[in-house]
Each structure stands twice: as structure tokens, then as C-alpha cells.
Image (tube, rainbow over all chains, first blue to last red; front, side):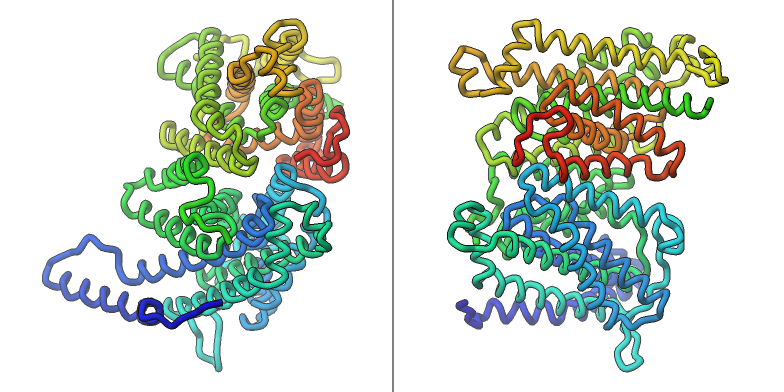
Length: 330
Length: 298
């Protein structure tokens, strides 16, 4: 791991650190100009910050799904299931039992990992299309359950309202910039962990399984164990994203966890190039912000057409650049 | 008893519809080993085509039905030529992702064209024969609307016709040859791309019929291709993917299971029943009821 502290990375780091200040600056200028009667056609600083947090969350999920889709080479069509498990575990623990966020978060991650294991054991033998179909069905079943079972969640359509913000020493961290730094730290940890995993014995085993499962097995790699590990880690990351989502949006509902969300996340990884962490980050950043920008730019109902554009992107990518926009594979 | 009979009728109607869609999935899978996710969307477009023709262009229903079939067949061929044909030799994952992208794109295209509202074909514009009041009363007090009878019979007729087509005609023989071995079929002088296009056309036309059938009974919405498409896919898996008779059988079984499950357990779970059957079949017997047992088909 050659990590030189170049001026570029320092500037990037500073930019990330001071981004909230920048958005407040924009708000200030906006207020100043609007008091003079000039209205700029730009989104407010709050909207920008919120968008950046959403984008970071998607990047987190993209890095997570990349472990199964990219490293072990299996198409996971139900990643949203773990996002859902994380969101509801943390949400229910915090609203029903009043447990602190800092305990609910790791519990949600562990629960996500457990569900990854539950789904992973029966699907170990499956490959290709059948794996994709089972993961899809699994996610849809979980989605149905939270949507339909009112007694479990406590409200219709799986709504949990008023999830409290996290607290440190009695101070509520409810401001947008709190969430910004929080997701940033979480994302950094996740990227670091996946990076270290990929460049270790485990990661090499995963890539070997992707390239040729039988050859990997004959080289002494315990295929089932490493696959299960990949499923578990990937699921845990998804659950982490879900646990963060609850307090940030101050509530969750089943609609957040529809099937198309999984496809969107896959689209990000494919765009960046399956199997590369950098690709997942860039793909996530590009596509998530593209979605938000399209929502601002396209008027009214046309805003929903962004999924049409995602579909076209997927088709064109597979046709012309099946390895993603970043060509180098991990 | 009356309720039971009505659920059975419902199940048979649903089953006929699922069977018609499932055949499209299974034929394409049999030949190019691709789960054509966009097939559910073709079915949805079939319903919308008929709706548009009947409602806005005042085309009589009996002409709108074949027109919708033709439009969908063309659409199916176009999808194959534009999206799938260039990827014939690419990895399976690429083709699968393309199919998903196609499905996503078409679904949202429909939402753009026809808006997300639920639509129904106005009953004044349909032959009076389809009104739900016109029904045969069965002995125990249940009613069998002519509409439902028509759907069941039409599905049956189309299935038999398809079966004969596959087994008795030249193009059917070519399709079976391609399903067994594309390269060998090509060497024997069969134009494989041509056969695949015909497969897409037939599957899509049958999907369009199913779409029109749904349009007669239920609302038409952009998401219908997704819900019904997945259930039909479950039917194809249950029957043994790649097996056409299996798809018919699977369709009817899933339809009955859904109707009875919705009637007696909880109607919110009617879609979930298809998912559960699909997952259980894949985990326990991936080759389905009638498929050959190849344990690791991927």
C-alpha cells in the first residue's frame, strides 16, 4: 500500500472537512442577495449538504454491495434487504426501547451480518441467475413483511417516526453538519476495512473464487467459508447504512427499501467497474448526485424519469464498457 | 362453497395469464439462457397498447387485441436486436444487468407516456359480452363471468397452438434445435439470430394477450409488469425453466396458490406467495417440476 501524502490528497481532505462551512457561506450569500432582490437559481446550502450526505450514504452502500457483486462475482439483487434490516433494527431499538444510538448502531450492524449469514447459507451452492433470483425474492419478502405487518413495526407502511438524533454527553447531534461528519467517518472506516480486506489473504481468496471457483477450491481455499464471509461483511455494511438513515431522515418507511433501490446501487458499482473500491466510490458519487441533479433540473413528474436514464446508462455501459468506466480491475 | 369455487375460478384465470407470460420467459431462457427481465414490461405495454387503442383511437376490441400483439412482437424483436444481440458472447452477468436496465427503462418510459395513474378500459367500449354481470351461475351460487371463461379458454387455445407450433412446424423444430445446441444448429444451416428473434416475437405476443386479459379485469398501471412479471417468472421456475409445458403447469399452480392464499390467508401477501414458492423451488429442486435435473444450472 503506497500512500503518499500528496498535495492533491491534502486539498481533497481539507475540502471535505470544510464543506459544511462552504454551504453555510452559500446560504449567507444567498440571503444577502435576496435581501437586495436578487434570487440565484441555485439550491440552498442545506439542500446541498443534505444531498452530499445522501450521496455519501449511497457510496457506502455501493462499497458494501461491491464485496459480493464485485469481489466474489455474484449478482446480488436484494442488497436493500440489509439496508432495511439495519434501518429497522436501529429504528425500533431507539424508538421502542429508548436505547442510545451508539448501542443501536452496532447492534444493527450485527443483526445485518446475521441476516447476511441467514441468506448466505442456503444460497451458497447457487450461482449466476439463480443466486440473483433468490436474493431478489428474499429482499422482496422482507419488504412485504415490514410493509404489511403493522403490529411488528407499529404503524402502517412500515413507518417509524421521530427517530431521535444521536447524543454525545447529552448534546443532541441533530444538525446537518453533524450527520455530514458522522457519515464521513463511517464511510472512511468502511472504505479502510474493505480496502484492507481486499488486499489481504481474504480478498485474494474472494477474487480467486470470482475468477474460477473450482480452481480456487483445488488451491485449498475454503470456498464456502470465504463466500459466507463476503456475504456477512457486505450485509453488515448495508445494515450500517440503514442504521444511519433512520436518525438522519428522522424516520423511515417501507417505501425507502423498494427493489429499485438495489438496482440503483448495482448500477453505481457497474458504472465504476465491478470489483474496484475506487470504482464503487466514483460510481456511487456520480450516479447519486446525477439523480439529485436530474431531480432539480427536470420539471415535476419528469423528475421520476431519472430511472429511465439509469436504465439507459446500464444498457449502454454493458454494451460498450462492460468493465465500467474505470478500466483497471482490482 | 361458493367462495371456494369463485377463488378457484379466479385462480384459473390468474393461472392462464401467468402461464401466457411464463411461456415468454421460459422460451427465451431455453434458447439464450437469459432471464429476460424486460418481459414483464412487454406484458405491461401490451395492456397499455390495447388501452390506448380502445380508449383514445376508438378501435374495436377485437382489432385492438391483435394489434397490441403485433406491436408487442415488434417491441420484443427490437429489444433483442438493440440490447441482447450485441451481448450474445459477453458474460452472463452483463446480459442479466442489461435485461434489468431494459426493464427499469421501459417501466419508467411507460410512466412518462401514460403517467403513473391507474387506468381501466371503460366497459362501454368493450363488447357487452365482457361485462361482469354477464355470467353463468354455477350450482352452488357462484358466478362464472363470460369474461373469465373467455380468458381461460383463450389461454388454453393459445397454449395448445404454441405446443403444436413447437412440435409440428419447421420454425418450432429450429427453436428446439437452438435450445439444444446453438452452435450445432448454426452449422446445420439454421439462422440462429432469426430463430431467436422469432422466439422473442412469439413470447412477446403471448405476453401482450396476457396484458390485455389483465386489462379486462383489473387496473392497468406501470408497476403491473413488475408484480405480475415476477409471479410469472416464479411460474416458469416452478415448472422448470426452459420447459414450455412446465411453464403452463407452473402458471396455473401459482395462479391457484395466489388466489386461494389471498382468499384464505391474507390478501396483502398474494405476491409474497409467488416469491416463497420461487425461493423454495430454487433451493430444493432448481430444475423445477418438469425440468431435467441439472443440479447447477447457471
